Length: 149
Image 1 (cartoon, helix red, strand yellow):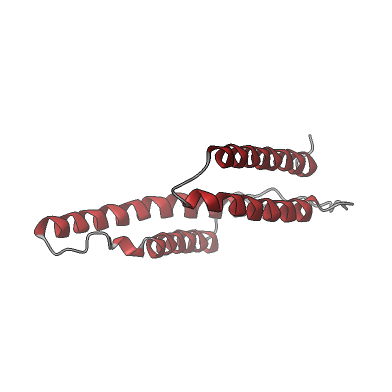
Image 2: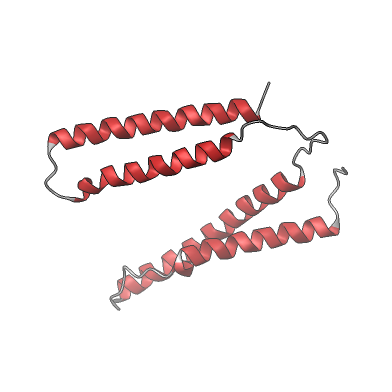
């Protein structure tokens, strides 16, 4: 593969930067701060300053993430040999992570109550610690499976 970028590559690079900019801006409501709903002069000034800062941060984010995505896809290493895997660890880990996420969400629901017993806090902390350890173990397994030394 050639290491030089063609005009098509530059066009895709610009498109990825523009897409990241619009995604960032759309997620932040294009810098409109709804928390400052009053029409006082100070809140209007803060609103306009926040919008300018948010758009500038969106530009920096778009250049960084758009370039990162484009360059990682453009210069990724391609292997010519396809390796047959007996066990697909990603399916196993994804199912385990979904179940773990549901369990963690279920056990974190009592934290929304203002009156939480200390025993419940301790038990939930233990369960969350075990789930984090499980996530760490699955990450190691996937790393060792897909990135063999």
